[in-house]
Length: 205
Image (cartoon, rainbow, N blue to C red; front, side, top):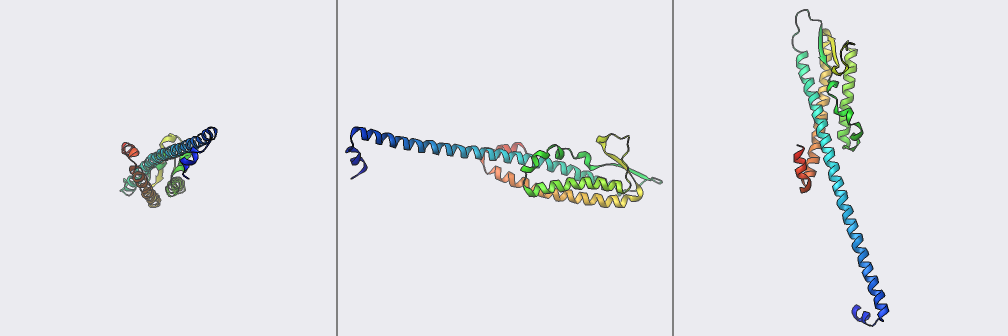
């Protein structure tokens, strides 16, 4: 006996109950399926927005590190140029002058990939160590100089030591940049696979 044949044998009241039960079941399944599908769409949207935020943060921090690396490269050329006869001191600025985005975004760093996060922290710790070592080498940060300039003077006689420490910091910057650029490429590739975010990625290029 088929289902519909069986239903035909039911009393009117039984058929009504059966029909209501079937309708309620299909309605429940439809609502549940719709809710689950909507939840997935919301999760996908949240994941895309989070990736876009990570990408923007990575690009910003990479730009800052690149600026600091370029400053150090320029300073290295200056430090190794001949000094004027009788010159006993050189003047310069600490790379920490350009470390602005990092401290301003500390609360957001934990959303970054572990490898990139580690490199960012290590590089900025290296800047602090570099400034500390400048003082150990005899560099003086004038009391009357504005704090925001972070200018300092150091004896010409310790130029080789300063150059060695600056080279170490420059290498740390290049290592951090390599890891950040890899992380940026990863998020760009992932986002560009999705048509709804590919244009947004282009907008923040």
